[in-house]
Length: 301
Image (tube, rainbow, N blue to C red):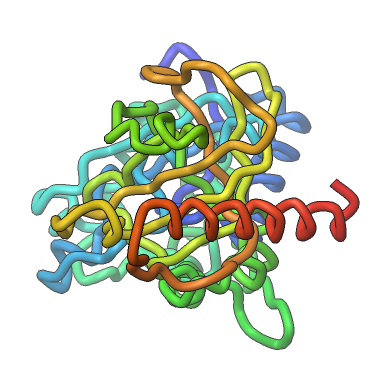
């Protein structure tokens, strides 16, 4: 039995989009009403990886999902369960019994399409009825729609793959985000008077359309700078195929190596391409910087 009593949202929460936001807001509301700790229970890997034997490319890593839930919804109690074959094959009532007992859950919030247990037999309606038997509160959140379309991680993944960051932001309710520790790069930008920071998408997280984006980089203290971000293989200066995320911060000078930063994607500016020389590349980056600055000025930022 846990030392705290919880109101808990169950789900995978990839992207932490508008639909997930409805669950998380209701969880906070129930926790406040009932004097409980608002919490989230998620899985470390996507259940479909085991259920269907493929690998779902994710919008965020587990750490990324936790960061978004904490920052955007103020829910600090985020618990990840390993999704194993035993969890997949567990009868759904047994799964609900075990988490209610071990985490002292007094209220459960789930989405209309949530399911758990062997063959996904624990549908939302079944769970709600079983919670009533257990004396546990339960809310089933209906679909959240935008433009007549149900908000879903599947649709948002495709938008990101297509570089449609502005549309993705509408469905997410926030910009698409990458949090990572700044890595040492080739230092070519520094030599050209245009220093950049290097980041990478975690393994298993989908890579957006290769190209250049208007972005913002946020520091630990909440301060931010406009950035021009290139996602791709840097064909002008590299022969390899390793994808990097390289950002030139406008109006900033300083050493950011080893710092944990957050990068937010706002708008696709152009496709990645190979230039005849480094000088030609950096002339284009200066034009990209002007485009990014104009984009944020138009937004009133």
